[in-house]
Image (cartoon, rainbow, N blue to C red; front, side):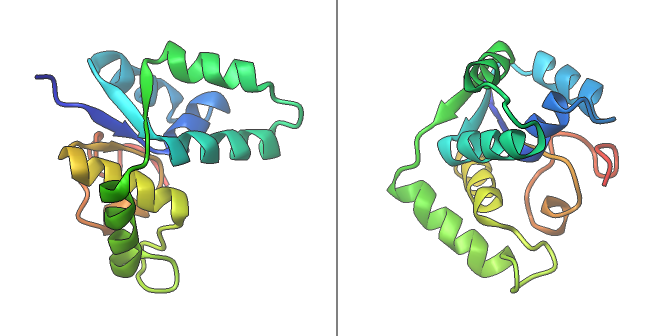
Length: 140
C-alpha cells in the first residue's frame, strides 16, 4: 500500500496563486502516488481562493485539485475527534502554532493516516506533524 501525503489549504492556495513555493509543491505532488485533503480543507481553500480572486470559478478550482490527483476524504467521527484534540493542543489562542479550524482538520487527517503534511508557513512546524517538505524549504 502506498503511503499518502496530506495537502493543507495553504499548499493548494500557494499553487493556485502562483506563490514562490508553487514549483516545489507541484513537484512534491507529482512525486506522490496518493495525495489527499479533508473535505473541510477542500472547502476552506476554495473560500480563500474566492476571497483573493473575486469571481474565481468553482469548476476551475475542482479541475485544479483533481488535476493534481488530490482526493477528498470525508470527515467522520474519528477525524472530528482528532481535530478537536489538535485544537486543544495547538489551537489559536492556546499554542504558538495557532491552528485554525481548517488546520486542525489537515493535522487530524495526517495523523489518522500517519502521513506527512504538505503545507506553507510555520504553524504546523510548531506541532508534532511530519512535514512533506523539509523544514524551512516551504517558506514562511
